[in-house]
Amino acid sequence: MLPSSSGVLTSGAVEVQPSTNPAVAGDSVTLSLSPPVTLKSGSWAVGETFIISWMGGQDAPFDGYDGRASVNVLTGALTLSSVTVKDSGVYIMRSTDPQLSANTSITVVGKAGRRAHIQSSGPTDSIVHLSNLL
Image (tube, rainbow, N blue to C red; front, top):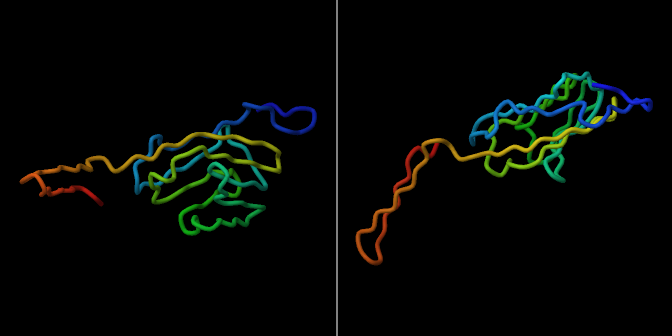
């Protein structure tokens, strides 16, 4: 990680590493910075939607992420619990102290083993069997 003369970390100096990708619906995913950096403040977003912000030892999740998102206020690592397919997207971490930005793309897939079988018993009747839904 190389600071420039202005104190801003140079592009590409920090990467976001997901704990798993693709992630499976219902699981937790942690997005960590590599190499590790000590951050005093920052925020996470997916696309244009804010997830959580922090300053010092305080964090504040945004609507829809309360109880599902947490951040390590020292390292900026984001943990999302109970992910869904809708959580797929580009995750962006921005820090103001020190100034840096990094992102990664995450894909969330349905649970492994989920199967849908359609059985037709006539021209107008069909039965759908779902297994391993939860």
